[in-house]
Image (cartoon, rainbow, N blue to C red; front, top):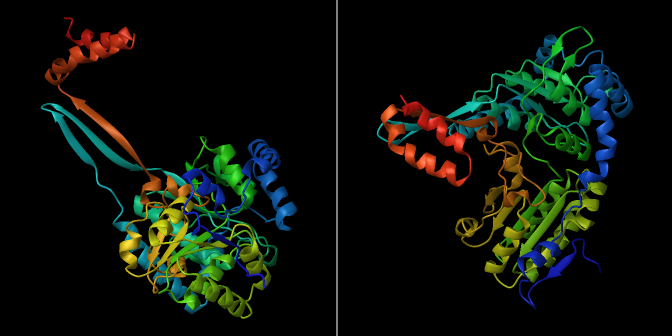
Length: 442
């Protein structure tokens, strides 16, 4: 009988070279370049025609034409007032814990005395205005509003706009829970716009149907589909971006001590996001692999989004990788560089501290990825597609820029003038040296 998750057995030959190992690992195929030709005309249309183009694309892609882009204040207040009290309480818990974690990320200015009379100060200055994207596709993500807004507020960003697609079933407004989450966080500017056209409007700004100005932003953060990602790529430079997010990923590194019920439930939880989501188990135990496969079949029958999950689990982006020992397991998950990595082994914390590449690491049986999605206090906007090898998740630092302030006295400059001239001469840039010596020519 064919198992649900494809298996790759690395035990007989041991690990291949790093390059071959990366190529052998399951991974979702995301070709952003392939859709750039579709997205470029959308971006160009919004640049040229502003809100009118955005509303036309809403009618085409979202099946509704909003009355205006900006959501009225009374609508935000009404959405919060109508929010289910249990959902409100859960969001308040999520916000409180996220604020506690992100408050500790705020950096203080640092002044270094390089020499007597010469200092360099690094100031951490927040960007002035940011656009925070909350998806509205297969699911509703008020949690993404929390994860984007909290670090921006902690960084001291003075102007925030939350952007989310208009919903036909809600009269051209974003989903009410998105609106309520924004209001709960104190965000008073929300736009009904989705996809590539939303990113373009954030980059270029425009004039709303009622005459109000929609001011452009300095940076855009938040996950979305491949078309939104392509727009981020096209507009990067005009705006800053957090990352080019791909389908969600979970990797679980487990040994014989792991509970197959937990592992299967966690693999299913991330497969629930998207048919292209990746669920990968790396294990030293063939027995656990078999038990997890059986649990996947058993638990899948009790889930709501069966076809979506089964497609994700049976796709080439998901699988089980058998390794000979935990050292090899750590090497595999480092090569994979998962968005979410769970460690379900003996001495799980010690193993976790050996991992270099992951967006976030969840240690032991009582820290599932779902906890991080909502109420751990950590941020769930994380690098995908192996980008955790070089990038981290969304944080307060995403919204801060380090600016150096250089202050030297006359004597401090005089003391180093000769070295400046020497280096300028070595680089054949004599005017650089002259800019120093001119100060001492009188």
